[in-house]
Length: 161
Length: 161
DNA sequence: AGTCTATAGTTGCCTAGACAACAAAGAGTC
DNA sequence: GACTCTTTGTTGTCTAGGCAACTATAGACT
Image (cartoon, rainbow over all chains, first blue to last red; front, side, top):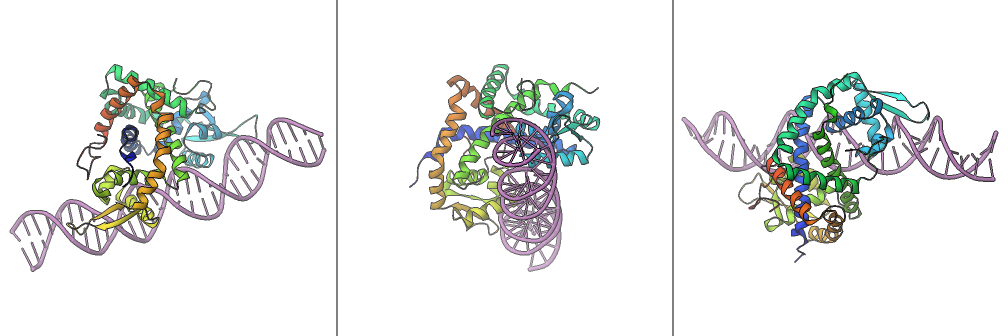
């Protein structure tokens, strides 16, 4: 006989976290696909759009996302091919390149965001009452700050503020 | 000029959700890798271990995870190759196969779980006080039940209960 | 100046997994 | 029985992205 650890309630809690998040992510992905965007491409465009001058260095994009620098290279290759992003040389460090969101890139975000926000309302925010939502966001921020101490690379302010 | 939707607070909320979850997932993945398990392999083993007779049909595994049936075939191929799972024909439907966790599979879970639970404590549960945790779990369950209505395929009880 | 070390980005190679096509078997329906 | 439609699992093919190797540049030290 084996241990009863498999039924530990902490596993249930983390399982709820995973199922809730992945369920949301799947719904978002379906809507993004209607606009020919992969979730990671949407995330990169969003981070660029929210950054000063609509640009971030490749390395900073890597630090802010789940991607390695290799992965960033390829995502930016695709977005560049589709005209949503372009590369710009860094004037002070000749090793570095900025990824810069283009006007087309911002147009694509404008097209996607209303539907995306509607899904957030429908499946997340609208399901919780005010107190529940506040408590949840506080808890999420606590966990995020703990597990992602360097997620603000390249931005002046902590992300999510 | 483009819209200000990119700075909508609802995007901040969902961004916190994503960063918190993905940050946790990265820490779990590192510990699982020490035991030569990919996150999806761990999830499959856990779901088998918690199911009656340690078995689930391929289709049910697909419904309970983010994988397509194609993906389930390949994960079970790998786990079977490593001796952690075996296939068993379904006696009542000759199209169906059960994936069954082996004794070695349970041993692997026993080896992984103490460290995994410690990480859950360290980065999630231990960071929140009792009320916060209760509120968070309630909220997660609400969202999970909404976005994953069919995540209990093949089990007698709703998952996460 | 030269040398050493660290960092930025790209590329070759490999694996994971989605999609679509498929084969086999169940479940009607006549 | 034959015929049709649905469901289960596997496989060929393709893309995404990690790892390690590489080039180029920066920075520090002598």
